[in-house]
Amino acid sequence: MAPGIGYLIPWFILFTKAKLIDTYTALILTHLIVALPLVLWVMIGFFEDVPGELIEAARIDGCSHWGAFARVAIPLAKPGIVATGILAFIFSWNNFLFSLIIAGFKTRTLPIAVYNFLSYEEINWGGLTAAATVITLPVLLLALLVQKHIVRGLTLGAMKG
Image 1 (cartoon, helix red, strand yellow):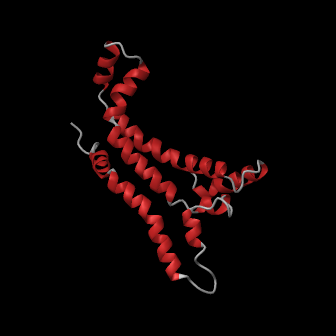
Image 2: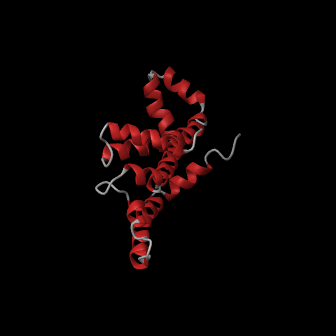
Image 3: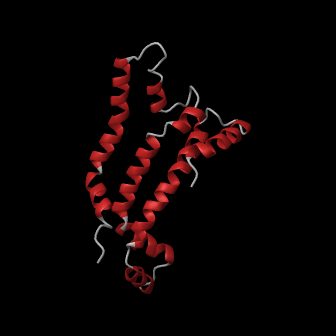
């Protein structure tokens, strides 16, 4: 797997030619594509832990493939989905490099806004600490709201029987 900087330059060229630099579309696409491998890799383990017998029982009871997935697999993997969602949110929230290059003044993200408190001549410590608090609060509140799902989701695959 290539490091992010390896495909940042081609994306910049592609988004420049498509006139998508400094747009929310470019930022959304970038964050989706960067977080997708993490989400897929983590979610594979949670869906592999769903017993195949339950899926077969749902199919015998008349569910389609999608019905068995929606009624059996997703509810059983819900803690993993929540934990993965939090991890992907934090991963995207803290993404600095892609936002620095692809975002402009209108679409800069909070880590880029915090970066603007640093300059060559001085560091605005008051603004920097206030911005760091503001940037941390949404992640902290979200983690506190779904804390039981995070713990359950992260420990779900710990015991194999």
